[in-house]
Image 1: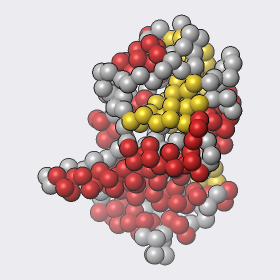
Image 2 (image 1 turned 180 degrees about the vertical axis):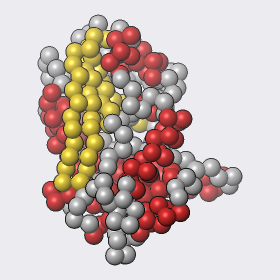
Image 3 (image 1 turned 90 degrees about the vertical axis):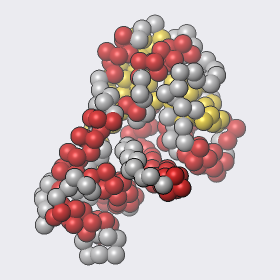
Image 4 (image 1 turned 90 degrees about the horizontal axis):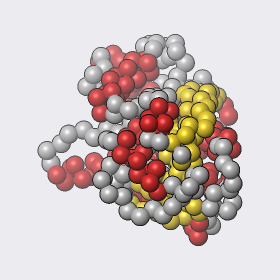
Length: 289
């Protein structure tokens, strides 16, 4: 999940940009949930739960991929979805109403990097998917989770191993390896802005006085033929990546990327029949010591 905020000196333009950035990210989160729903469900099914949790906190819930998967899998649960984005939470609430589970969902807008969190209750399960690496002070977040978890409660940390790949290695034909070069740029940016991306959360959980009860890595490889959403997911993802890499890519690479992103052009990524979603997800399950 990339978070790119290009600098602008105009406050009005900045506000407009953030609104658009929020909407673009929400679209990617929704597509991520649609394409990877099977893998999210398998992670939840794997969790070493001693009993069916009734009170769950979804930290950095986004538009609700984890929230709704948890509600589906755990019928007795109520979820408190926490996110900094009012737009994401509004989208989540609309989905809850549409799915007729709004009586089981509550949302809280909060900055999880703040020293003081709002009262999130005493959950049996805290779920943090693709959110911990965004935290400025993850050790403080771990301490906060440790304090609020119910005795014997479980903390599930789920992280992606980098941004998904979509194109074959020899694509596009005029600039083979383009996607890898784009990712090399974004990984450099992430190393500067999000130093905990790709971290091993096991030792950090243990240091925070949790007992690590399990770790699992799931390989994701979804052929584009299995879901028409794969093409839209690839398009939205590469559009977002372009905003981060445009200044660093060679001109020939940027031109090739733009040909892929031109939905009306003959080289549009939506016209390709060789797309797939390739990544890994790792989950750490830790219990309150």
